[in-house]
Each structure stands twice: as structure tokens, then as C-alpha cells.
Image 1 (cartoon, rainbow, N blue to C red):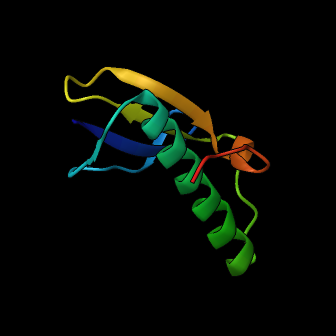
Image 2: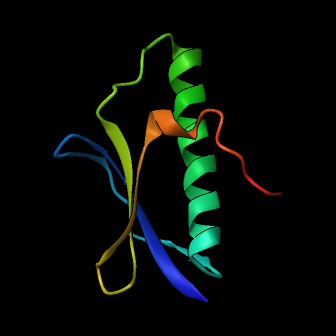
Length: 83
């Protein structure tokens, strides 16, 4: 398994970083984890009464610091995942 690091950005501004990372099997597992994380961000924004920014996105980096996935947070809604 490889370790991947998830960052939340609003445009070019880093909102939250991930120093520990997550060990995941492959890029499909990374995608699934990113969708679940984005859904949690949307849920928290809805519960707090704050609208999520359309510019927010998750950026996923591998152990070498290379971006392997970028996902707009709003695209997680309605996205199919396998459990």
C-alpha cells in the first residue's frame, strides 16, 4: 500500500493540510476516500449553515509530493462509490 496526503484548497489558498496521510491500496481507493471526504465537508458546511465555496477542492498527493487527483468538493454529491 502507498500513503496519500489530502489537502483542502479554496482556489490557490490551502485551507487544511494532511501531514499523516492515509495508506490506500490504489488510485480507485484514493478516489473513493476523496469522495467520502468531500461529502463530509459538504455535510459539515450544511449543518453549520455555511455555504461551501464553489472554489473548494481536494488535492491528493502521493508520497513523492506528486498530485494524483484533484476533485472539486461539490462534485462529490451524487457521485457513485462502491462500499
